[in-house]
Length: 170
Image (cartoon, rainbow, N blue to C red):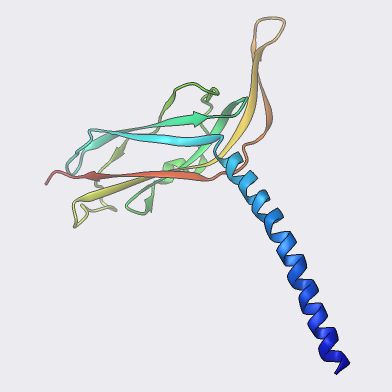
């Protein structure tokens, strides 16, 4: 009988600990989400907006920075209908993403279809861009007027993704 009572008290104690820990865990999760919002992909721009087969497309992204520092050393992953474009695998973009400013960055052009990527049967091309990593930077001129970029740390909360679906001309 005592072991049931002890077991019941242990269960109640564990439930109380979990009840108090749960709001703290939610608060930490919300802080992580707030941190993720400091660097975002606001828009994906593909030109032409309604390409056909074998069309060379220009790809740009508009980035938002609600942090206090400039971000740079941007690493991206780009997928077309779920197929990753390998050119982004070992590239960092040293473009400064200023806080509170409009930041548009040209990424690499791509072909709508290639030997390894046929025309989609549904006529839709889904372009997904993921910002996988970035660093906060201090950019200032030294005493000789030379611009110096000093890394301040990794941007927390990445990766962030955005996608757009294009209707392809037949």
